[in-house]
Amino acid sequence: MAFDADHREAPVSTEVLDQLFVEARTRNGWTDRPVPEALIRQLYDTMKFGPTSANSSPARFVFVTSAEAKARLAPHMSEGNRDKTMQAPVNVIIGFDTEFHDQLPKLFPHAPDARDWFAEPNARREAAFRNGSLQGAYMLIAARALGLDAGPMSGFDVEGVKQEFFAGTSVEPNFIMSLGYGSDENLFPRSPRLTFDEAAQIL
Amino acid sequence: MAFDADHREAPVSTEVLDQLFVEARTRNGWTDRPVPEALIRQLYDTMKFGPTSANSSPARFVFVTSAEAKARLAPHMSEGNRDKTMQAPVNVIIGFDTEFHDQLPKLFPHAPDARDWFAEPNARREAAFRNGSLQGAYMLIAARALGLDAGPMSGFDVEGVKQEFFAGTSVEPNFIMSLGYGSDENLFPRSPRLTFDEAAQIL
Image (tube, rainbow over all chains, first blue to last red; front, side, top):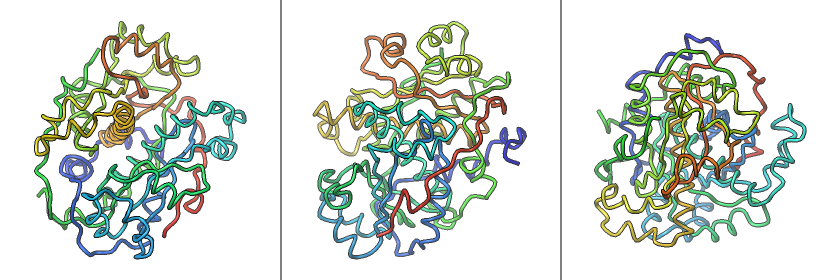
């Protein structure tokens, strides 16, 4: 019942809110339980429905799973992130395509001129970065919804990863996220968050 | 049971995946059912737990709910977004604080030098934009989890909104999202998504 108002208006359970947000933690250690390819594909087929400007869907994903691919990624991770990244069964490099507008005739068919809305390169890169970041967050929450743990990281050599994984393309790396079944190894205590009044106002 | 592996490994139900991602839609029309202030606060207190680099939490939120505040927002919305924005019970302006690093001694207490990691202004703005966008996506999914519909938009005058709502601060507007209980008015057919092989690869 896709558009059933009763369904839409129902909050999910406290247990689900805990799993997605309240109790979920960024993992720094990983068990050896593998992530099957079918689950990687289900993850994409779930998060792909998250909204983006004009359905532009600029994020691009490289799932690093093999020993060979991990060996290509390792030298570009920052020192503090390398060991835990290699321990995780999957590391997804989340990039954004700065030429995403070429896909708009397919992705936004009811507006034939949508490609032209993104003609200016600086504004287009900003749209790719914003919407690609939204999609990275959709993937993180979708991973938690599918029972996975996620470990997002910005600590890597962006230019090195670009040359190693996206050479000759219009894709730029945004962030890297480990996926798997986390252990409590090296888990920090939960850090404090800003209060509502520190981060928000109601007008 | 915060770190109970059995709990973590359990996928949520198909109904929840549908509500958060698969069947959820960006609304262009809104019913007059209000959004209570308690729900706005619950929304923040849910999404605030989403991960950001060094727990930097750069997003800042202005919930526009009163007729007076809406009148300040309306002139800055693009023509195509204005009417639906005014119809929604809540519009949240999602910004990011480019001086977020000043909060790090409080937000990341176990690394006393974390503020210095973001000393360079261009890299700091990029981190604010990336992590603030992640937080915007966390809010969108958390809204759906709480039974709300969300309508994110980039079509507005960024400089105008900055001057009207963030003058004299280090906060820049990122995107605007309507919140409420959507109607099917002006609902587009679901647009196609990129296939796995168009957007992703497994190495």
